[in-house]
Each structure stands twice: as structure tokens, then as C-alpha cells.
Image (cartoon, rainbow, N blue to C red):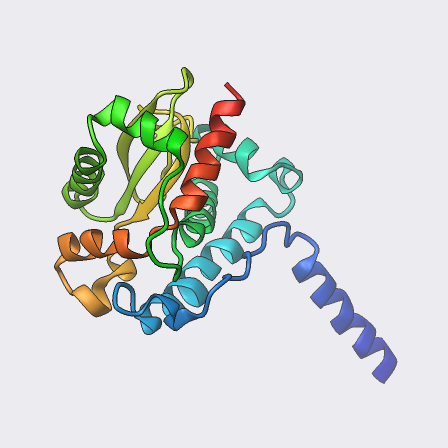
Length: 224
């Protein structure tokens, strides 16, 4: 009888994890590594609670559907045909996985020469670009994201999306490959900055991983 109970419990656990297709990528820095710009408590709650919930809920939403065998990019490309649970949680998972790589404790990283040239050509200057994307984040009503993306012609553009939408989704007006995403949900900044979203957006530049953004830009351009 005891062996049967153990076998039954094993079957339950196996069923729970059978569809755990998507997982969080471990952070490459400690929760407190970004102190001064993003506090440790915010990072820990953001990563281990909010982002983890998107992964768990996404795996639950796609269990037993064709999407459990698809990539995240495939799911996002046709999200208009899927349930709100898949849309919200697939977006939340992708957006956060990108966001963590946008941050670094390494000081004074710089964009590549190729990305710097593209930013200057598209926005006039680096300062003008920072102002534009910060405004996109500040003006986002409620929760959402500000993005720097590459469009189908290889050109850079700034946009903003509500909730957990992103430029890869077929539901957004401005589609492209995101290379920089800034989370402007309150849980990303409220413990340190309260309602001062603009201060959070200004501080992001102190911990931005330009090396990663540059790599994503060059990868996006190579596919055009």
C-alpha cells in the first residue's frame, strides 16, 4: 500500500512538471548588485515572485495545447489567436527575461559604434534618444513597457506597450524586434521611488547593459 501511495504521488509530481517547458534564466548578478539605482528588495520580489509567476502561469495555460511544443517567439507571433492567459503570461515571461539582461552592475558600459551610429541617425543624438524612450515610459498610462526595437527594414524605433505586450506580438501597432525594454510597472520601482516613475527612468541609465543591447541590435540587423 505504501509503495502504491508513493507511486501515485510520483505520478502527480510528474504530471505537474511534464509541461514545464519554460523556465526562468538565473540572474547573472546578485539582487543587491544594482543598489543605488534598483534596490535589492525590489529585485528579489520582482524576479522571484512577479516574473516567476508569469512562467508558472504560462506553463499552466499551455498545458495540453499545441503551444506547449512551440517556442516563445512562435507563441507571441500569433498571440491574437490565443487566450488572454497565454498572451499576458507569455508576454510577461519574454519581457522579463529580456529586462534582466538589460541590467548590469558593471559601470559605464557603452553602446557599440554600430549602434551609436544607428541611434544618432534615427533620433539625432544619444541624449535625444534617451529623452524619447524615457518619455515613452513616463507617458505610459498605468502599467506597461518602453521599447527600443528594430523594424522590418532594419530601422530603430521607440514605442510603448500596455501591460505585458511587446513589439513581437501580432496585436501591437508597431511591430519589430525589441533590443531594449524598460519595465514601467509599479512593482519595478515603487519600493524605492514610490510614484516618481521619472526618477526610476533616469536611474536606469546608470545600470544599463549597453553591451547586451548592442549585441541584440547586431543580431537583429544580421537577420534583415
